[in-house]
Length: 221
Image 1 (cartoon, rainbow, N blue to C red):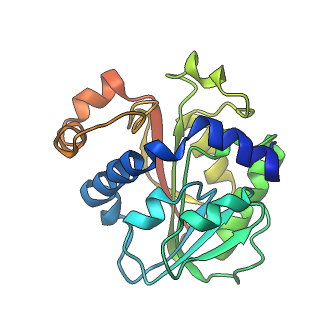
Image 2: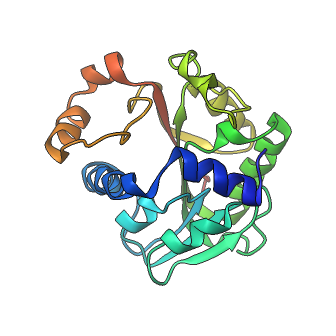
């Protein structure tokens, strides 16, 4: 798994700053049309692998935490967000049962093994309050088996089914599992908000274009 300066160079090459505003615009629409329903405005939110901060800049929350191995991620976060330059399998900067929502997008496939993934699940379960949500989005190997391996830092192939099984084994309740949600490279180019909203309103289109899963799990009360 890439770390530190290697991550910085890799992400600079893959996600040039010139496309950042487009990605933020896409995420503002995604959050307004979909994800804000899953995140109460008074929630304490933690994002694993916050990257360029598109989600945390778009979501409304009482307090925002971000963890990322790439130190450059700190400068893209919204004012007031707490950044931790570290690993998602050791969340000791927050206490037990102290977070309302943990969110991650396109991250778990970068982990080196199922053992590390299990540790991430265990840490998320620990930090969530009873009833708290774990929202996970990522490429589904069942539908993105060609594109999945086009990225140097993809290690762990996951499907909606394997992810759901791992979460359940860690003690999570599965609230919603959507095998095909967003296209594989959502936000890779200019995408008008009206098209994103139209896509989200037509689940039949997901069956054609969707290659990323969305799984919403919760820590039982």
